[in-house]
Image 1 (tube, helix red, strand yellow):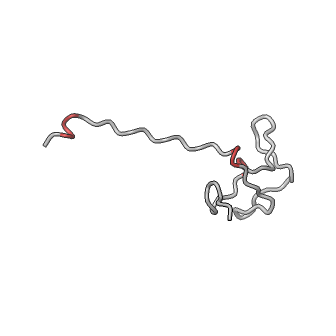
Image 2 (tube, helix red, strand yellow):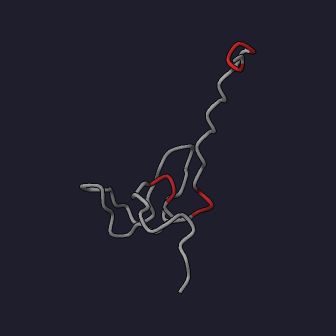
Length: 68
């Protein structure tokens, strides 16, 4: 059985749907549908469109933090 790339629980978002056509920076659905109650019948996940979250900055430590 083929394993999903980002798991089974991918929330519906037009930003990474394969039916999304970006015209001048906006979201435009080829199917001309909108998400109702968090679900879209035509949602098809496209991993190429997904933009990963930025990694958080590491905390800055002082030499006093490591003193015994």
